[in-house]
Length: 461
Ligand code: 2HG
Ligand code: ZN
Image 1 (cartoon, rainbow, N blue to C red):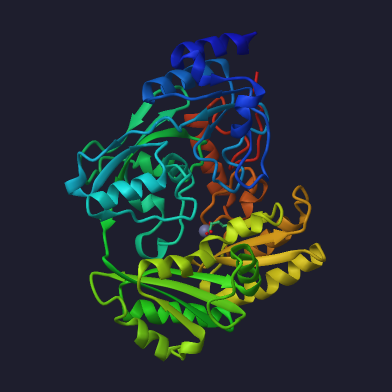
Image 2 (image 1 turned 180 degrees about the horizontal axis):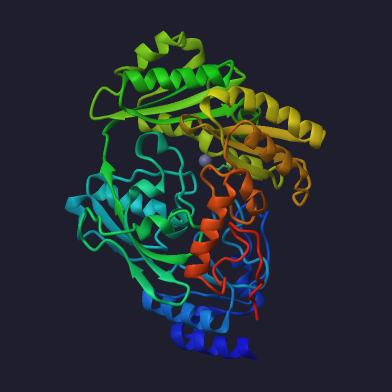
């Protein structure tokens, strides 16, 4: 009864057309992109602006209704999927884009704007955006901020956190937190916008962001080299970083991932078969090859036979697809276990050897694929062939990560997938402090319960 009353209040706030309750209309909002996370929502609410979203949260807070904020559903840790009858709050209709501060290198966008739209807006004004991920046409800025997304350009520009000038966020009780104003520097107390970034929808719902843009680099080169081990790849990246400031991306692909993506693309590897492949991009005002050849030579990798170099956009896109299409290629073969982990660069090689052994011992016969962002030691461990609900393989990988001094969530967040392992990466004091902040901002635990922290309040009806 309470829920019916709450729903009529919500309908009054956003109109009944934007409250989806029938199973067929809810269906696409109840499953994530990877098909790993699927549940049911008691309703899907689609506010058109901050005032509407604020009114919706105020009602949910009063009736203690659990909510799952949702963007483009491209997350990979179950952070945006209702598993337990929560109300989904979709930000997809928050689609405003303002270029009024474009001369200061700032664009202001609604949470539902996709990364691709931000990139296109930036490009039209002679700017670029510092974060890029393969799901750019679907991933929304709100979700990317909530998860502090990383991607292919972190080595040069940092993660989402580094691109945010200020945020507008609706808190659990419906009040609106607007950080930063129009100034470019703001040192008056806590940086609450930064607190929200990476909080995975547990502290508030981002409605609008002022994003910092970066310079466009007109000349670029993409190259793929084969290396025998990841230590050689790490050395090459270090050599390049010392030789040039133009390094924009440094990615790695193992032989198993290259096989899978080649099969998917009906293609063959662009260079000789190798145990590992390193894909890099350098971008500069001019002469992007400056420093690159020297670094390759110094690393003993200048032999044409195992290096592919692309100078113009079509051949560059062609090389990039061997890295960007791996996720889709794996998805065609089944529902993988995905473990996005951060490993100290000095121990990357050791981790790559050990993780395969550990997984094969825990779950004999499965396929392990390793690829990711070399600059940050960010490994995407994908495991095909294990039962999606059997967490023993996840446990084995995450325990190894902790033993080796790595972190359990490098760029995808903790979500529901890794909440039970949070203490492998955070101390008891850190977890207590995080819980105290959560309790202060969302005392009824209505925002994304079960995400980040293991669930302790079911909260729905
Ligand atoms: C990537 O870097 C994404 O391609 C997806 O973060 C990683 O599919 C994955 O595991
Ligand atoms: Zn990634």
